[in-house]
Image 1 (tube, rainbow, N blue to C red):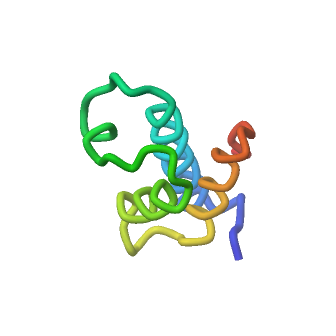
Image 2: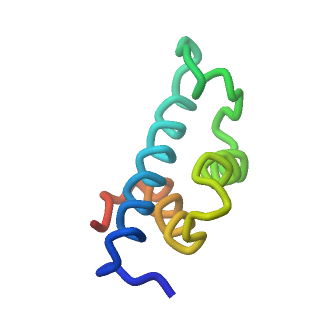
Length: 80
């Protein structure tokens, strides 16, 4: 279960939210550059989800990462 009072989980959530939000923003343009554009994931929701999980690593709280990606894709502000 995700505990918002756990600073480690909250930090993972914020980092994952930032990664997802950046990838979503990059998907809107065809003239970007850098590692996010080079990933070539476009606007594919599942590809963005998988890329954020990959970038966060196996040690990251999967529930926090999933919550962050879902919030970013829905256009919501970060929870914490």
